[in-house]
Length: 349
Image (cartoon, rainbow, N blue to C red; front, side, top):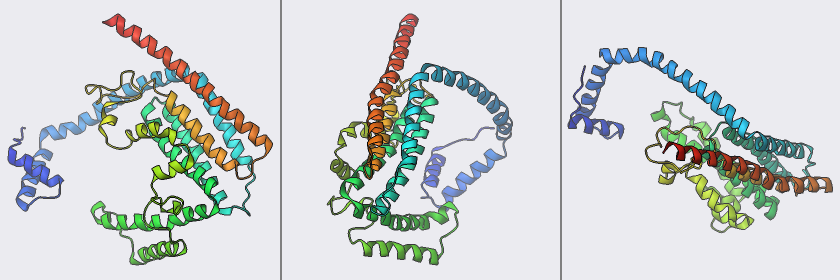
């Protein structure tokens, strides 16, 4: 069966997607959809969906198992060293004696951030082991943001930790309003008036308790940061030298053109022709791994600074000095892979 897609139908579909259509447009689209659903070709697609799909999935899994085994073989040494560093960080967190009576809010925030940092680091390790270099760098961005917040709170004191925690009530109400606005379109359950009123009340109480707070994401950083943006907070922490990597990581989170046509996991970036078939890679892990270890240690350092002892200081210095060594190990493996790839490409020319 063939369905004639004329100009009128094309325009109707575009309008239909944009939710900007009249009854005539809707009728045209629905007639064509009904015709497609009743066609023999559509019915045959259900059969081939399962048959061809399963065959391809099994082939992909077989290839992936071999590919991932090669990654783990090539990068065994740096990955194991990375994992050892993470285990030492976990021990430091678990054994740390929190000065809760003196800094209850700062301890609460940094304890939560440290736990989240371990989780994110494990996620990045998982992405590296599975060949997703740009994904690992994108996930590092969150870890870096947590490291900036940790340093800021330690540097400027308990009052900012209080406001950071209080801002959660404001964020909850902001998100609830967005949810309420779109819940019907998404076919989700509506929030009750009672729920919205309670969230609004808590948000108002937070802003009443801390006049600096408002609905801006980083308002908890006032008055130390007059115009609270993440960049302004970074400048207050003295680790703004990571900005080039932060900008690069944003390309894999937002829909910018560089993220479309450049990938750190490819030897030669990412060509337009290859962009639709890209899968895992076996290079590009050095920066995500090194940046992750640095951000994790920055968070641990901020935490330990609340009540550090000599033994912890020695461990912290030791771990920080291990980072360049592990990063170099990643880099050596990548250089070897790149050289082999260049030789292979020269041979097939």
